[in-house]
View: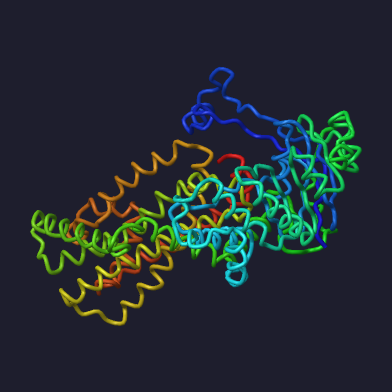
Length: 254
Length: 289
């Protein structure tokens, strides 16, 4: 059974600059007493008082303004950040899709990048070998897949990354927005694949500003504000409170 | 609304055990060992990445990774002849001596220098993809091992050009190298974590490594110092013992047990220090990079 349980969790970032990162400062600070007030590392409270519990079948939209803590919450769920206070327990294989460019090596071919990305997402080499043809067909890149990635355009890179990411079998799928730079026809295709992927996965958490996408994929929503959960409930209600109007009705009307 | 939160790190018993869970608190032995185990299970990934690192360096060159061996051969020959002449050493014995010393030094140097930057260099991966921290260390050590094997070709060639009796004891090179690998790993974990927090560490380590190269008998013969009062101080250099345990079997030189004992003690102490560091600061690295 896959699950995400977070209770009273907080994520505090220490903000290091050259002074606080310096060993000299740490050593001298202890030996000679405090030097001014800058001997303490400033901290940014990215998340606090986060309590939530997600189970198999949950399709959660993550909404909120820039800097509200959406991405940090996703990284907390993925296990990249462990909570500074409180607890976070994640059961299941996590596939985070945060930045499509990360883990891509410009010097090696598209096919090799597909393999590496898949391995990073927890697939075995055998599973990836079985899927590579399917991914190649989806990306429509053809012979380009044997070329080094540096020869690709931005759109082609996004195609490749999306192809890999949507081919894995995750138990927990964490999507952060940033899927741009692709043409509309391809986006429609990606959307179908994304939908299939969501159906295959146990839990989905999707941070996006696109109401259409959210309405398509999600059933509940979390509204983040200033690093805390402002509201957690059905998608329609939360979106309505967040935007101040019934957004779902508008997208349905279209 | 914001009540003080206490970390309930130890109340993990009621949770059922399942892979990839975060049951115990961030600072626990079980999480540290789980990190090591998970990293090891991802062999296909770091195995592939380690190869890629090597292939990539020589991707557009004609000779490819053969350049590693060629570079090593050129440097060893030049240094062997230069220092051999300076110190009045016969080339047929001194050249293999220098080459073997360099071969070992390159491995140690690589583990120390790249080890201190192992997490800083992988910042993007650490911040965007959840993976065990030790994955990056395995990849680094594997890459250095591959470099070592490429350089070993030069040693093999020199053993053919300047033949010398190599008995069964050459097999001792295998456990000796295994010890070097283990030590490379703990140095990378320890130095890597500390250097991620304190960015002054990599330059300090880099200048220290330079000094160590000259303090270690690689381009000069340790034999000449034996018996002199200075020899006692030279033995304070830990790298010397690592070089000796591997060079002696590779050159068919008489074995000295003292070096093995020192290396064994360093291995145990270093692994313990690295484990403590991994336990306490493993979860902080993602915040620090």
